Image 1 (cartoon, rainbow, N blue to C red):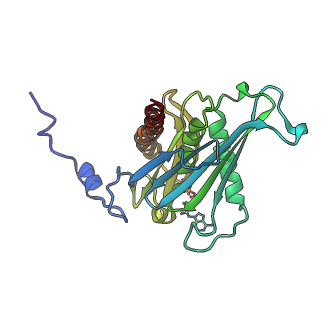
Image 2: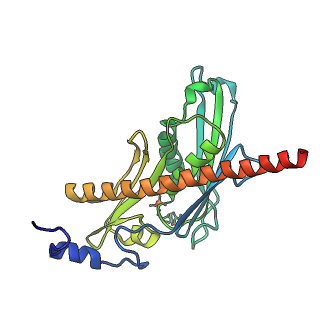
Image 3: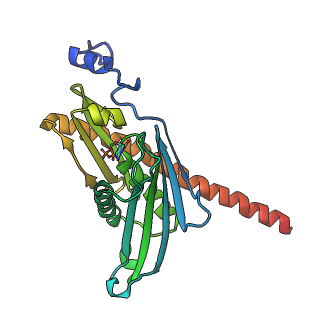
Length: 257
Ligand code: ADP
């Protein structure tokens, strides 16, 4: 019987394994990441994500009465999304004014989150989602959507599923996971995606550059794998605030006794 273990690696597989990226990562390796939920005192829900050098804070306000009144929707809430990069988020100082890129990304993120939030529960109201990029290092749109979904859940807003994003790309002919800033600039392609992980639905998919059909499939599968890894971290962040709350409630009970 032939054993897979003993099978000799093809030169393609060997080449893939040998490729070391600009920051020392393997092709299918994510940057280190951490998500924290419930970090802001004055927002209804909040979260932060650190993904390599990215540091993004998401805050949610609402559901609340919508103004101006002529804009209200009778059958569902309006979801307002703002993705913004701070002037100090990049090496070159960026204008604080929203750029065309930020306006477009806010719209793309709104499209993604709208599919998950149960907006029909809040007619005539609105929900505001702010994503503030404090530090940028590539793939900020998918990191922002990932943090925003945790902030929405932290605000107690009913959702069909969480939303989690990750990117893949192509650099020097190699398909890579979680595209960093240099790789975004130097690489041949960039494929950011976001999904609803339990419903298995794609809610954001963009592509910059060129990929063959096979490369697209490989990159998509890799981004999916990264997204599922980050989904575990979203769940961990949300369950850890629940645990913290239990500890606080226990403390209050003990004080009363
Ligand atoms: P994403 O952040 O989703 O990958 P882009 O592909 O547009 O979006 O940007 C890639 C990276 O380039 C960003 O994450 C950031 O690190 C950097 N970047 C974007 N806009 C600017 C800017 N105005 N000035 C300097 N760096 C920028």
